[in-house]
Length: 144
Image (cartoon, rainbow, N blue to C red; front, side, top):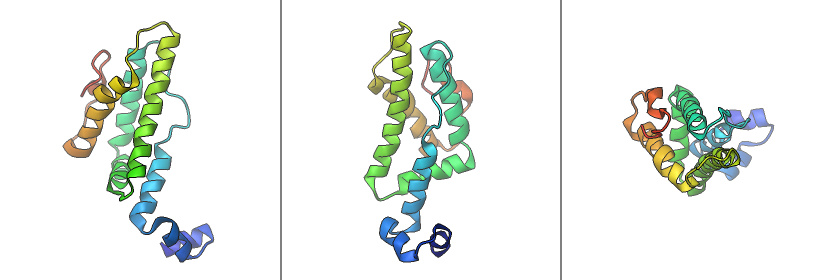
């Protein structure tokens, strides 16, 4: 923490007052890295968009930094961090759903996308820890 404070140009007590400990600071850093800088790829269909997003997400989250980031967020004592992680996933699903509806496609509610895609992926990333093949995101079958 003192080295982080030095790089930030503040005293260590400032860092400790804001985050309390290194685990909470790392959880916030990981949350910031989860946010997409650009919109998910538009493939022309909801199934294609979900598959493309899922493959990219798995590539990032099965990497060592991705796994550590997710672990940092889940280890946080602050429930708000997990909530923000969920909200990030919901926002992506909402973007993909709205895009599909604008194209005239039938699209399930965000809650269904969360339950059938995000929940199983999160379970496998947190508990199954093995490699999840990109085929887990096959179009028409968003479950691993």
